[in-house]
Image (cartoon, rainbow, N blue to C red; front, side, top):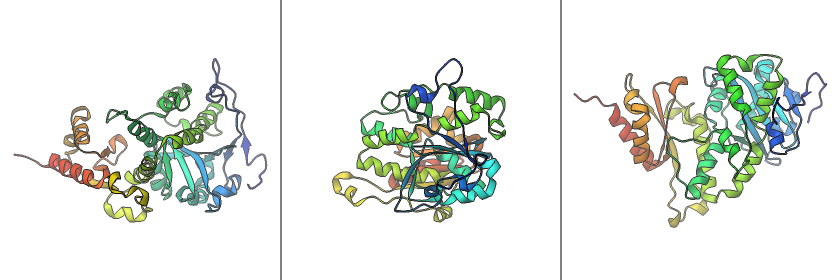
Length: 342
């Protein structure tokens, strides 16, 4: 790890919030140092120079203003077992993000993240970074539920707060997350202010503090089939809001192939793909349906995930992820919804 002066690397002690205990204290975890990074020299050399000889697993998250292709990425949080790094994108700018790009695109560094889609979109459109080799804890949770025979509603995606609260994983309260959300609604520029406030530092650090712990707990539960689904879906979710047509897929790393040990006849496993459909002007309402009923009905008919850009966009695309046959079935139904009948 490169050395730096106290003004370059800042270790910030985080006291508990008034009237309660911090997330760290609730889990009885010893605090780790938090470093605010404005220059590449302040990041670990193993992170900046990915190597097959020193593979890493890190917790990862992003904060910003209306985080998407059009928003503003302000902070990247990187959690190691012995330290948390808050990469100040505002202060470090293009130089800092360019230095981080090899690690974020590397197959030798596993990025553990909760719901990768918008973070990946922001990294791609704002800095040309193709986020790769992620373990998405939201996807992992769904796979474990499915693996253990519990069925979730098709439109129900576990939040990070709920995942932390689940006693099978962390069993801790993260009430401060909602406090920060309230502040962000009151002032959307919350993450842009410098120097970072104590609350900003604590909130950013707490978003990645337990990702490595969650990773190890989840890896213990996932079987070989689910691990492959986790890898391939992580790859497809990272690119789903970034690829505007099938030609864009060529710019991204190939999704993990089906392992040989899962190709036996009794496994009945099928390749998974991402499909991008263009929606003609005025037809998105037909795709969504009243209160999302149309999309839910298609999900029930097909074993595929269907995503739309919503308020953040893109407004004219539908993204379908799943086994090839199920994706083709969903495409046919979706195209039928776009046809005008007279």
